Amino acid sequence: MAKSRSVPDVWMIAATLGILAIGVVMVYSASAVAAFHDYGDSYYYVKRQLIFAVLGIASMFVTMNVDYTFWRKWAVPALLVCFGLLVIVLVPGVGVVRGGARSWLGIGSLGIQPSEFMKLAMILFIAKLLSERQNQITDFTKGLLPPLGILGAAFALIMLQPDLGTGTVMIGAALLAIYVAGARLSHLAGLAMIGVAGLVGLILAAPYRLQRITAFLDPWQDPQGAGYQSIQSLYAIGPGGLVGLGLGMSRQKYNYLPEPQTDFIFSILAEELGFIGGSLLILLFLLLIWRGMRTAITLTDPFGSLLATGIVGIFAVQVLINIGVVIGLLPITGVTLPLVSYGGSSLTLLLTALGILLNLSRYSR
Image 1 (cartoon, rainbow, N blue to C red):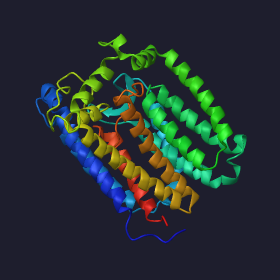
Image 2 (image 1 turned 30 degrees about the vertical axis):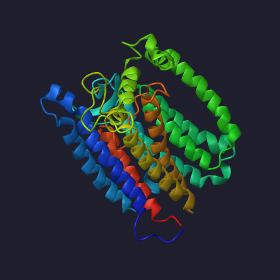
Image 3 (image 1 turned 45 degrees about the horizontal axis):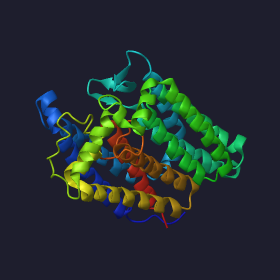
């Protein structure tokens, strides 16, 4: 293993703090109107976002200074705890229903989303398992089937909530780590075909998912129903132009665009800050992903390399899906924008994961 560097990757830290700062500002701007209408306090959402941001940064600082090998021995216990939480959240009266999904544990506005924690726990487990079975990864039965079985079980529990967006992000990040570990493309291609067939089945099994697909293909078929969010999102992005309408000057946040502070926060950002503001945020994400992949590539320890790959995969897949949905390239899935959208569980978990990635960067060559 390469000698530890004195400091973690400063470019990664700068990108993280830059994205987080933009997120706090945009949460306030996007939520102020709804917060005042619902709670009589324009700062209702941003105050909570700031609290979770501080907690997340503290967690990131801790994990940044904990040797990443610590997580190898806790990978299996963490996975088992997350499986337990995914089962508990499905119990009526225990799991809290929000947005049509029974995916929360807690009381009132205070709660955690176990599926968010499962994303990181799954990456920890896959990195540990595949680093110990490097010589078996090309064998479908002995090398590929065990991690895929565990991954499929977690995905099934998440879909019982149901939460297709979080499940898709977990699957995407895990498969990226599995591919980097050396899995055969022929095996992955066959699994991809099975996955597409399964996805079609999931869509057909739930009418609201089929409505989202038809709305994605032509939102104007149902402009007041399934296509409403897509249309309002484009109405926000279009007037933004090059430089935007100005910070705080969005029109779509006045009860036109649903969930402006969560799933569709990028729409408000593009409306207020324009092409330049949206491009700046995307560039910060690309910087973060590039530095993360550089860390993964230059690590000599297989466990560390796969762990870095999986963490970067969580960010990359989530950013790709969220922005793809917002600009109309993908159907609506309910995936938030990392470090930018309002949400306590997601924010603290992602900053914790970035702390692990920053610790990994200390060991890159």
